[in-house]
Image (cartoon, rainbow, N blue to C red; front, side, top):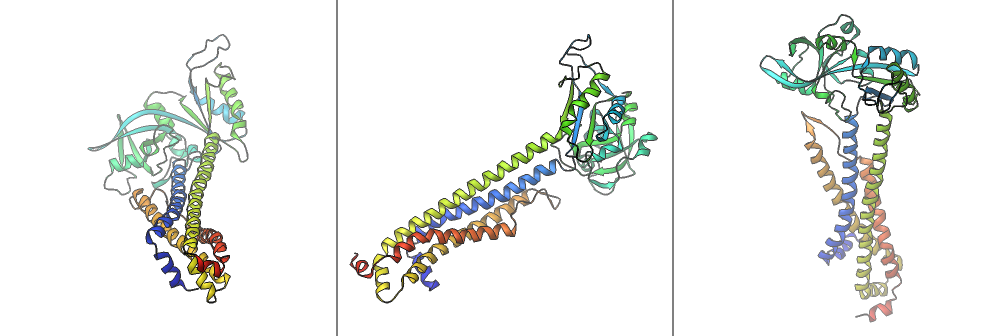
Length: 410
């Protein structure tokens, strides 16, 4: 088989070859872009939930929706530190129980520089539920709690606003309202999909005991964050958790609105199901488009064989075997499919690279919008296979052409 002859045959009708190859080009382009883009999107969403324990739950107070023990529905109430002790003591399947207290939107001040922030009071145990990404310094520790130290861990947005020159800010102070806090750490976590107390990069974390005194909140708690022990399914504990808190505050233990228990397992399960559906859709659309292109190649090769009936007859008459004729047609089909497909892969990779650059900040890519080498190699192999299959029917027809009948064709 002469590859120059294959090329010459395809170039006889450039417009037809170009339009036929475009179907394959578009199919593989869509497939690679969807795979790479879907992978990048998945990483972006996963980064938003990065560090958050998958076997966790959040408990907070809301107006009751049921009358109970002589009290009307719609009653407002609040949790306190004793609820933390009750849950830790009575629900033995829990691993960590961490109270949270919020002071709302505030302004952090460093000299002439300011930054809008959300102040949250936590305990050191909270780092085991929502793992921080400490860039400088450390997180809060038990001594900060016991001694009531006025220290804080700031988020990335607050750090960028107050320290535009960069560098380690630990040991320096910032002011929120009339209270000065020493910075002991910087949390570069930026995931904001699970937003507890505001976006992670806009948070200023202080010991909960300090926040209680600074804003005269007593022993009040806004949210209690929980994680289960290894192997424990948090959804099975929701009723028990609600009952422990509800009975202590004279609330109906079945009042799901009054004592809100948000199970993050449900959220992560929904995320997994979402990506399973997205992956299925990506392969369905991409493969369907690619198959449509391959069918187009097969149809055009059928037309080409019909037009070249006389040529095939002459080849047969001068000694070409049916296998040689079949190999020629299949080679043309594979060459057309492979060239168009490789062009689609290269353009798709280039576009994914530009998309990755667009999501790069400070030299760090937020997500990798690319396909693996194995995926690209698999796509190329699939293209060659489809090209061969697309050429089989036309090649079989060409192989069955009889020399005498072919030379009679006009």
